[in-house]
Length: 168
Image 1 (tube, helix red, strand yellow):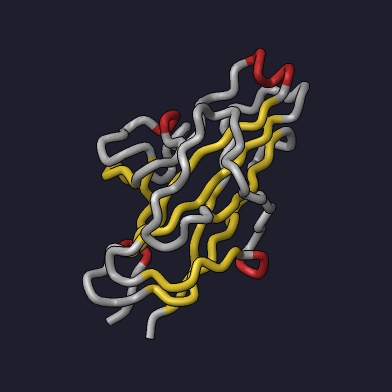
Image 2 (cartoon, one colour):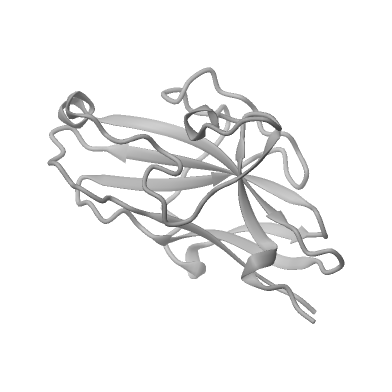
């Protein structure tokens, strides 16, 4: 028996009832799981004015071990796919509250969380260590998206944040 990808799930923040990715700005873990391979599943579409001036936006998500009995060990958070547009990028930061902690809440998507340092943790080798996630445990991850000023239209910009761990 081992932990499978189906046991490791990503959830929005913003409180138990939050279903809106645009309100995933920290706070308690939501019961709403992020849907993979869906356009705008974390950040809203970049409008023309935002592309012209550029922006930096933030979201808070949680990763949870949903396995009933096994601990996900030596977990690393990393960017498995950097943005596909040459005019955008993402970086991540682990939440300072640690395992099962409630992430700080930011007042809006333009405000950086206090005390967080964002890095381009591209690939497993650059992964950020989260420690162990016991059954049912969760850990917060901040995602920062930057749109460069003068960004050109890009119909399907995408990026992926992943985790990797082990089981005994």
